[in-house]
Length: 110
Length: 120
Length: 98
Image (tube, rainbow over the protein chains, first blue to last red):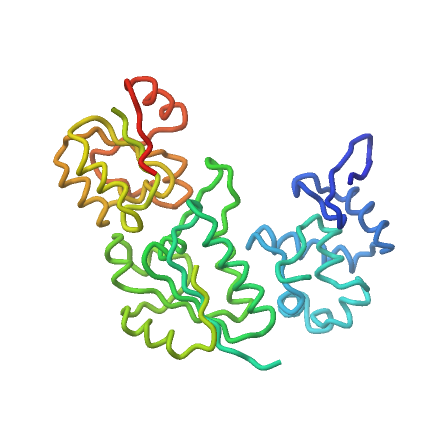
């Protein structure tokens, strides 16, 4: 599969995750979010940027429990809970947010 | 869910074979399911933790940094065989994460104490 | 002859096999074979005991990947992929000890 954007074609896998992480930019995030029916707000971007930083540091997309805890540590307990994250990303913060952030599917996510 | 004691025994060097990376992925899965996970490194497995992997030249994804995420997954029991380090000219200071160095006999006892042992 | 070893000296006997079989020539360590060239290791002792019968090389990208490029023993020359090709071209034959 592929998504067309700004005259370029960007490859995705059968579940809609980017094949090449380096292809990602904010415009592509917008298209991926649209496909997921997510309207991106500053709160969404905060989580997306957090995930990208986490990936750069550890080379993995974290599991939900780990993401929740790590976000709580960095952005405060009112954001580090699954209710807040599921409101932003109804189909699962790890799965849906990772996809929009251009990361692979989190390890251990089935 | 019943919590079981899982030990992952790592005995292969990284990159030359896929064992080290596969082990690390299964460790993260087990930890995400909140099991009691410990990791043992012996024989060439101690090379997995050697600091300073630069994998650009061999065009493979490096995974040294991922050992740093283990703490976020509450995996803090990392045991390393002292003889294996010594035979390779390494000490605990050469490793990328904090570990507990012990004898093979002590590692053997730890294995006896597990519900599940997975060897890579 | 160029002898190419890609297995760790403490995991497989490939390097031992070379040292027991060949009389002279060059040994190129690649992949997990490069661990033999690290200071203070049992592999270093094996190479030293060969007593200078062989010219010794190790592939730099494999040393770097494993974080051991800064602890290569004396007497081993690090080569890049182009150097690997040169070594194969310079020798009449090469043998990979799998």
